[in-house]
Image 1 (cartoon, rainbow, N blue to C red):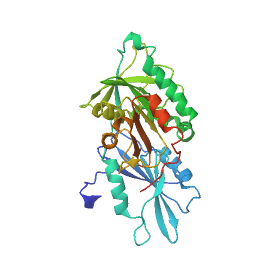
Image 2: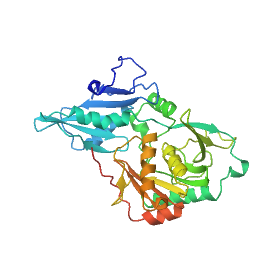
Image 3: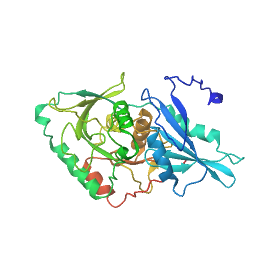
Image 4: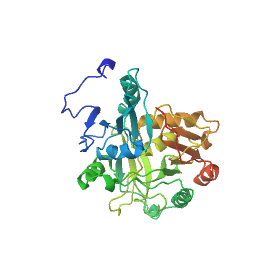
Length: 338
């Protein structure tokens, strides 16, 4: 990293963008984030190669509150590095000629992710018009589409944070990132030219019942604060937050006026063009890369874009059209690549 021009921070520096966190495999402890922009790579060395690397490595990723986990294990007289992602991805990095993990390959993989910029803050505006408190035709379409996604098997169970984190660490995650759990998939539909309804963060997409809690109206982006503006009913207690992928939906709607709805699932389809980098969810870099591929599609209003090592983002004129187009075509296995 130093050879690539990055300054080395003091061990206690809270301003560092990237922390390489060496973890005791017998006593994994949570990394204490001080700000959202900190990217943490947990490095865990084991004395054996597990039969199921993902199953062995994912608990370390969650328990350390890291963004990535690099699991280093022995193999054929050398060592191999497996990367574990929050989306439950798992893939091996190339090895150097001496049988050790290739530091350059690890740098090339991590640097674009660590330098990407999160846009996941919400500015909650309790001024949703009273006539929308019970929703409208679009929120009804969202509820119906959520149930259909569940019936198609495209909404895997949210990962149970409670099984792997202490109550203290869960509160830390909720306060820092504004989430109550890891939940896969989301959907949205335009309300008007400058706003859209979207499933909230961490909710069951098969039961989008409450406006302001399960479904929220995204109305703007405060670029100075890097925060999405979300309108909720004034009577909402503990209102929901927009999905972490809201910035991706915002950029697509802003750049492509013909798009009327968006569905994101953790699945794959043959023939999709994918982003070259697996940027983290909620970053402007991922949003821009996906929106660019949507714009390159033969019909941007009916595009299907792959997110490397992650899943699919699919656009359509409405949710019903998207679901009809993807039914029977989505594979639940996302191909993984370094």
